[in-house]
Amino acid sequence: MSKTASYILGISAFYHDSAACLIHNGEIISAAQEERFTRVKHDSAFPSNAVKFCLMQAQITLDDVASIAFYEKPLLKFERVLENFLAIAPRGLRGFIKYMPAWLKEKVFFRKLLDDALKKLDLGGIKHLKVQFCEHHLSHAAWAYYTSPFKESGVLTIDGVGEWTTTAIYHAKEGEIKVLKEQSYPHSLGLLYSAFTQFLGFKVNDGEYKMMGLAPYGNRNSERFNDFYHSIKRDLITQYKDGSVHLNLSYFKFLEGKQMINDKKWAALFKMERRGWEQELEQAHCDFALAVQTITEESVLLLAEETKRLTGSANLCIAGGVGYNCSANGKVVQAKLFENLHVPPAVGDAGSAVGAGLLVHAFQNNEFHKTQKEQKNDISFLGPEFSDQEIRAYLKSQSQEFKVSIDFATVCQETSQLLSDGLVVGWMQGRMEFGARALGARSILGDPRNPDIQRVINQKIKFRESFRPFAVIILEEDLKDYYDLDMNSPYMAIICDILPAFRKEKPATYESLSIREKCDWINSDFPGITHVDDSTRIQTVDQKTNPKLHQLLTVFKKFTGCPMLINTSFNIKDQPIVCSPKEAFECFQNTNMDALVMSNTIIYKKGKDE
Image (cartoon, one colour):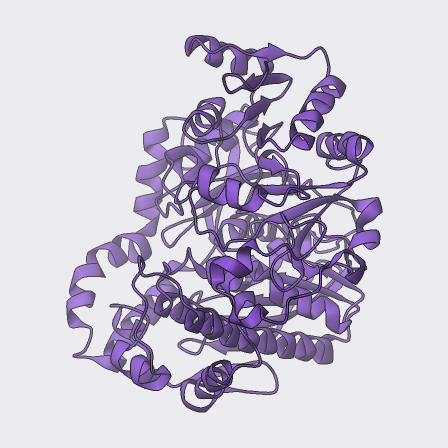
């Protein structure tokens, strides 16, 4: 152990989206998800590669680390697992026997598992390390609050389940975070949303955002929507005025560990079988998704109102997996309950690794006083970065021709020309983003004015469902000229509507159109980023904290008069976002992407530069 050991290593693992971070004197040095290194999407394994990256980024070893901060309390979680089984026994016995060895290893004997994993890294001693276990939802709350610009704030955390808590309301002030109200397992808005996700044939803990994207295709005025909506409220859940929900557990199977729902009861209730994952989407699925999304937004808004009532704060921080529901966040903004909203990147369990680390720093140093600090994008770009030399060395090893621009201004000019010509560009700049959203470091870019761009990117590049919408990146200074939003959204966490001046009037036959026809319908001057309900997921870009992306947008605006671009994550379906030049190049080669820009190096598909 170093005499000056002062770093804190934050870790989340063993459920989904494992991650690690490194904190020094309260500052986040680095953070990354394990999936980016193993290439296993939502990798839940111990984040050995992410830990190694964090240590190497700071040029330290484990000898320089004083404490490990773990994002939840394994023994308390194991207690829930046991009590859950005892409550339903003998049902669920097969699952209990199957998963018990892993539960024992990961929960009861966690310290041995941790020691063994760190020893394998061979990056210093471990006997001196002090392990601190933080409560799951408090880790969520800390990630949101400590990275916000607020001295005082209400904090709302919503996910599937932590140890016992599924939803919590906190009041954070001068660095201290105090819990005011909690809801406990098995009643959970997050688990409810995942159950709906499974019923629609999407993967739990992965496909929730697909259901959110499908909902706008639903018909709110249809009898079927009305039936779904009232069936959910009548038979499936009780929704209370404070936003909490009580599940009718006879309709659910997650207590037994097999699956989320009771298929027979759901089919009888909704007069519709669970959709197979390869089954073609129908209008009924869209109407169902819309009913689900509507109820979710109602609950989140009620929870926000309760947070306001309990705290009286002008500020709100949101964290937990449900915080990825940008549409619900948009409803909170639209309600104008709070003057300011902060939803950080990596809002799920990955971010809790950092939240736990920041909590441990506060407790160890008795530093609960929080100064108001602008950290916008200091918490976004925390991953690996690759030099021009590394990029070009890799390309040479692949015998790949490339063009080197003399400066970044030239890169922006050439890229803007490609984009304005209707081409699709892979974009890799600087340190990789932390979290599920590509924020301009590992992105695929396109011109939102192009009526074919959504189809091209979805089907020929991302190889994913055609109904999926794209987010917009827009110059912060131009936001209010195009969107009904009066606050910035640097982490792509808010959905709002494009202004009426840019919309196209819906045809009288709109509701009779197929899903494909609705998707193809040109509904605005910017069809590439305007969803069928006139909404867009927003990422605002400013010069100070995201300078390269801001420079590109500024040049593109000079070329076209348009201050925005399509921004989607640099990956294909079912793969993590790219991390290295190797992965970026392979994705470029294996798709119909037209050009790849990595730092100041540009690669064209054959014939594109001629």
